[in-house]
Amino acid sequence: MSRSLIIAAAIVAICLSLAAVPAPAAADDAWNKETPAARDARMQWWRDARFGMFIHWGLYAIPAGQWNGEPVGGIGEWIMDRANVPIAEYEELAPRFNPVKYDAADWVRIAKDAGAKYIVITSKHHDGFCLFDTDATEWDVVDATPYGKDLLKPLSDECRKAGLKFCTYYSIMDWHHPAQYRGSEKRYNPTKIHPERKAEYMAYMKQHLKELLASCDPEVLWFDGEWPDWYTEQDGRELYNFLKELKPSIIINNRVGKGRKGMEGLSKDDQQYVGDFGTPEQQIPATGLPGVDWESCMTMNRTWGFKSDDHDWKSAETLVRNLVDIASKGGNYLLNVGPTAEGLIPAPSVERLGAIGRWMRAGGESIYGTEASPFAETPWGRCTRKKLDGGKSRLYLHVFDWPADGRLVVPGLDGDVAGAVLFVEGGTEKLRTRSTPEGLVIRVPPAAPDPVCTVVAVDVE
Ligand code: H79
Image (cartoon, rainbow, N blue to C red; front, side, top):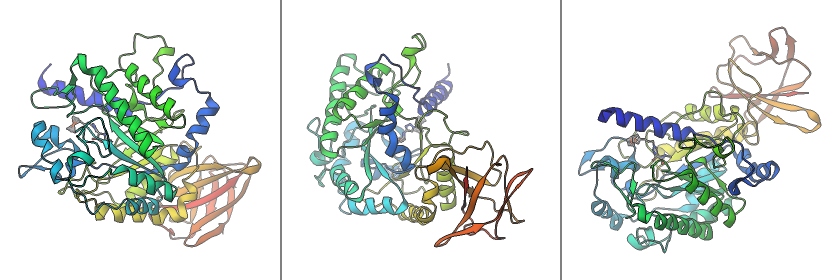
């Protein structure tokens, strides 16, 4: 295989692994002894939440996409790999990391005002640098930086005060730990491991996870960097079990394991793989992922970690519609911010989160605690639904393309309609409906109350 083919194959393999989803549990494994009812109870808050804020923060915010005065392509948090930076040189960032403007309460307020119900923050990205206090290494914010304080503990405290769930990201691949080494001359990714040091590294990860649970008590452990060949599905089950024993209510993403890779030779039951939800990255699956829990993680510009020259921001309209689109397919939206090395969430991100929050203050009812659309197609936009008491359902129609003729047609909806209302500023207005051979026709005013996304709620038997 040529070099470029190998790289292309590696990218495809990574993308496949990022989209992999957990299958229903097999009965005979320690990692999935849970009954379906217990699992539903454990997942309930997460399923209802629908919207979370992702935070990628670390030393890479200092170079912010440039190394030795040269712009470095790709995502900002990968700069160590992309610019081929030796470990000793990368370590020189730590004495320069002093985020004196960091205000955990402010970040939580920004997330809460946006309508997010949970925060997922990097505890350790691929560069191995820990944002929390750990005894396992000196490669952490407390020991290696002038700031000298744990960054995650205050955020977890503020989350709890504000009623948000605190969750944390953890990379398995580690470009700094001596058990691992560069995959090639020019790249850290994917790392290789010194086989005789793998047990030591597994213990290292477990110590981190134990420390994080003790200090921050996270509700979700969001793994990443699981694709190096030295890490196996069995290792994933080991970490999953370890965490579930320490905290039975914890929720763990599918990247704790490997997906179906390498399990082809096993029996069907043994092929069930570990993790509680699928993690499509930078994409929204066309028809959702039926039968499994999932969360799309996405950036607002092109990078996760802060890059000073990335101004390619998605519009607030796109972000609101992505949230609606994902909810209509039964998933969660994990929307990223990349704070600066000083500790500030960039203003364009704050503005966009504010716009989402303004939409969510009225529209949140149509997102939180809802289920996927019952319709295959809704030509004007999207739909979510909620079960009401007495066997009724409420359908939330999310109209992106407002009908010019004042007739909003819902194909495939017949049967008893108990009423329809339009969401307008400060409340709702009653709408008239009529059953026709085309479907339900709802009379709406000529102009959309909200051109980004107007909600019409219909109660059906
Ligand atoms: O943490 C964020 C990313 O750093 C991480 N996952 C999200 C949540 C991530 N890891 N890999 N990827 C995302 C996608 C992989 C992209 C790659 Fe590449 C393509 C790796 C090698 C080729 C991007 C481009 C990184 C280097 C070049």
